[in-house]
Image 1 (cartoon, one colour):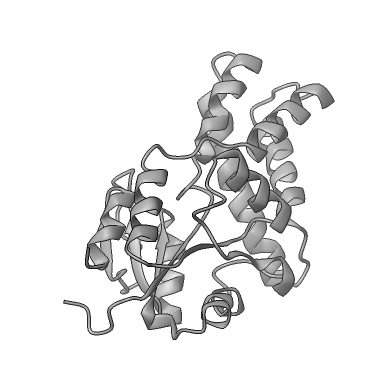
Image 2 (spheres, one colour; image 1 turned 180 degrees about the horizontal axis):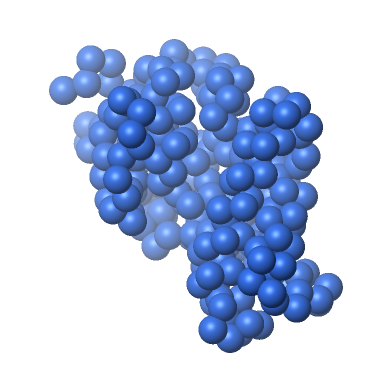
Length: 226
């Protein structure tokens, strides 16, 4: 049993609520035989760039970082990414597919009186569009972006946005992420954490574990009495 039962939830957005690899379907149409590879490399380079920029004090908005990651990935795979294909893929990223269990889980949290929001590397506009496109605007508030901090997770200043917005200590907020590094960063900061390990990846080998590890978003509900 947790010492400090959480009173609110903050979700990571990309990879946790929204499937970043759903762009692979369009990528496969544009570049047959390369869709999955492009989607994977695009995501990896996007995250690499957030860390490089944040550590170097050279912040650029997440939308720009996402575009840069796409261009690198296409170049690495020797794909002819013209302006038309680039814009189609970027627009697809703006409207990523939501995981199917999202609405049921978020609706149940609302029924139980649990505040649920987002804390994400995404730009405010990106988050607003993604949430609206998924039909979740009535179930997620606040939508917290690191943009105002001019740095990216796992910088402690980004995780500090949650307690400041919700008026709760970090340990009383459940932070949910499908990214192992993000779950560890939030744990170090002091959140109660759930790592949604959909891919069955190994735990980060840094001597820290999330509060709990699960395989899907429905396990968020286990933290809150019905």
